Image (cartoon, rainbow, N blue to C red; front, side):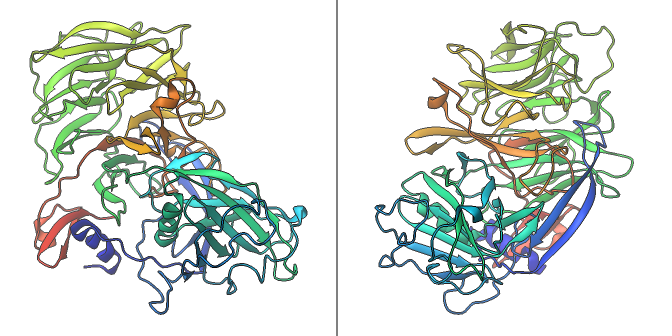
Length: 584
């Protein structure tokens, strides 16, 4: 077994989380990358900065511990919690009457040995040295099993030593680091032990207060402090898996990538690859992960086949479609060439009765309870039968009921109000909400695309998800994670989407990549229920990433050797069992 896979095998088979290394060694480079528009092959060139320590999880690497002695964790010096230590004795932006909290500290290699920060941050506060936090956005909410989350900050004047702290209801976490330079500022990648400590600090929370303090070796203890800001952590690990489309970049072809949130040591896996002739992109996965449709070529319509996920073997001949949605039991599909809907068998793609022939519509989504279908319908569908990868405005959202094996009662769910495009609708996993895109441009990667939400009972008016989808950037093709969780006393659901927005200091705006945000239904009853979005750390930063389709489970073939697996897989064997896992 390759060394880099060992911890992932532990995660899949045994469910254990490995310790992670962090080093002070950095690699700095500027890359020219190629992204992709929806269901096409190439997008635009985009330059981004890559500064990545060996402990970063952005590349999906799982590294062995550097130091197994004392109480070091994964090569990061740690100081065990000490309730006797005064965590707030020094002047900073935290009121001095806050009760003393247990303290967990981490020292990134290459940073001077620090105990409680008193030897470097013990002087008076100096506002002229104040750093500022760039990313994550204040009030972002993340699941407790997100890996590789980063903190980006501007260092302030004259500073070269930083304390990044997370103060929660049960403990205080401090991380001491030098500046890892990127984009005119600094980044800190949170290792698994660091983020585990942050999750503990957030309990019973569910928030921590993030703050950065800055000084220098010659400052005599004077320091500057950023404003503190809230970071929320939901109560339960996010489950399910994402299959997304990674666009081709240079000689690296397009691919469908899988990320399994249920594995504690998760890393991205290549599920299917295109080549220089056959660009792959459009795809849809059944709710419980048994089947996947993958299209290749241009969407006129795309040449598509259905595959068994566990074996990766095709189960259907080729047929044309650009959009597909599975019934909850994965026996049927509704597909669209971009103009008209068809109802087919989900194993072989053959037409089945149950939907009126010639029904116009695009971008269908089948509710989790199996009772309804929602889709976008252009107000004037062209008479010719050639497929299309999107449509211009205006368009409505339409709903049908599914009863007795057939779709009935077609009706307008949301009519265009002033000629806008309403498209890419998706039912929430509890079937009570519909998220969709609204804009005034052609639907594929529209630069004016915004995310909107409405309860299915329409007892509230449509509302823009302004926190997750601000007006100054596009947000496209939203999809819900399949499981509900909680955030304190409130239910919360996560959703993903593609956006060309800037990723903190690491990447300027321009390349479409995957983002995730939390949605709080109770808050949405009176206001914007969305939280600010965060960049998904497991994706490659050098290519466009789109169409994050979710499943509840990942079927994996049992194996004894890699000969038992598909060509793009290898067998990870631990003790007496093995599973086929996609290569990077």
